[in-house]
Length: 286
Figure (spheres, rainbow, N blue to C red):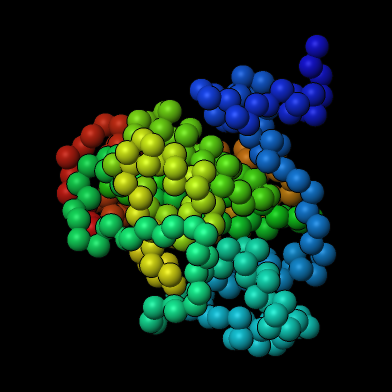
């Protein structure tokens, strides 16, 4: 008889051909986050800095490590630019550039062009947008991955983890497809999780077109960036979750509210559920 979480986790088959990790968690009555969780190794000082950076991002997303090091030192944190750069990577900070970034890219991963510049997005499942954001916790941190249907702004899948892996992102995608069908295009940034063979191969095998933001062009994926701002200012920063179970339950409740009850300005004050599941024929902002 399975009694403990560890016993249940031992039954998870990550290579199962038909059942995603999310589906297996449902069958085992196991929290999805517990499958991905590994203990945090960051110091309390680093966690405080990461939390500071997370909130600072929505004030100055155009700042790089040099300016962030200055304002952190002004705020009383004794940090070097090198340390700031490392923590920026941990929270998945994406600086807005005024010009294309010419830094060397990972040659081992194929990059795909941005496909959304000249198309009209007019129906659900035409374009899905996905990304990862950082969530500060009192004694660690977690990441939230979500997928949003661009036309309707409906969140079709989400998951939390404290590691950013390609397998985790792929499981979120598989869950969305299992529940809502195949999209025509999936848009991501150029993070290693989304450029990995395991992720792009699945998209190619299912004939889903791959679109990727230009380097340093966070506005290419503005829909998911706006979602992150909403979920953080309307829920996470207000609730200050203290443990993973509380966080997972809170995010679940927020996305139910976001999809079903929250009027969306760009949808002419309809809800995402009105647009996605009730198929209201209402013109929306580009």
